[in-house]
Length: 90
Image: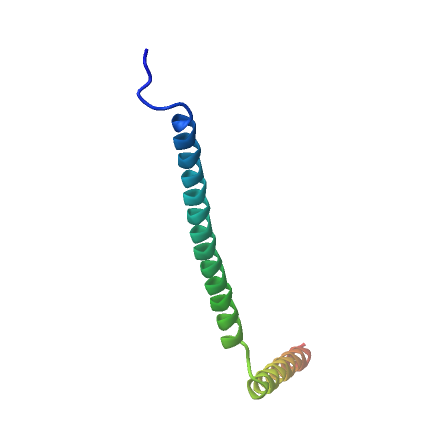
């Protein structure tokens, strides 16, 4: 069968097409990696924002500790009163 192209043209076309395929693949890979990097940075930023937002300030922490301390003291007193009333009944 006769070839309608000159010798070497077929090889040149194949190598050119393979180079185009390689550049296209490299381009798409770069775009996907940049998008994934952006999503990762955004996710980390959102997590850090909500971690900081949920953190108590120094004044709130002191108030919470004082409330906890008051609750514990009141609970101990009520238990002691119960215990004393039980002894008096016996």
